[in-house]
Length: 185
Image 1 (cartoon, rainbow, N blue to C red):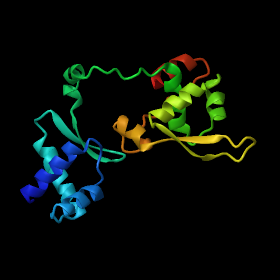
Image 2 (cartoon, helix red, strand yellow):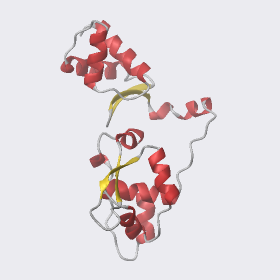
Image 3 (cartoon, helix red, strand yellow):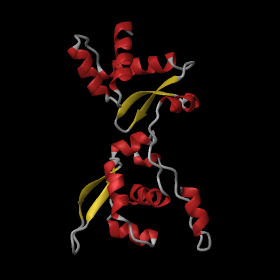
Image 4 (cartoon, one colour):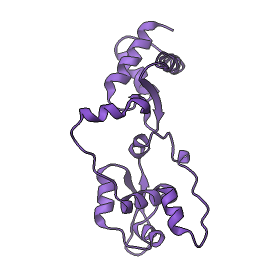
């Protein structure tokens, strides 16, 4: 494999700050005068994965493409570099995003039926602002309620390629609702 292409792919992944699709990488290489097929770019990524085996970096494939990131083992010390705190996710918000993830597309009413309590407007707004959910349509019912589904950014934040990689839901026994909820969350 041409070392210039491998190093350029590495630089692109490092500098992008977001996941890149193979086709995006090919386009960026071509704009620099380097010609590579998608299979060659995948080979470059495989070579980089081998290069990073004994380092603190790794290449991860997520829903939006490939990204260069710090291995989980080395991520704790880095948190001290940033002063900003990410907002905590409340139990209600976690229940809401879990229901949307597993049952999508769902309406707010569907979420309320499953949770047994009303869903606050702030919860939905918070998930929309994080770009974890999006409106994918409207249900053909009175009031035409919005249908919510998860986004690629949600999958990226959880290091998942697709929604099918979510863990299986445990079987529900009538007497153990609290235990099941704590296992899922």
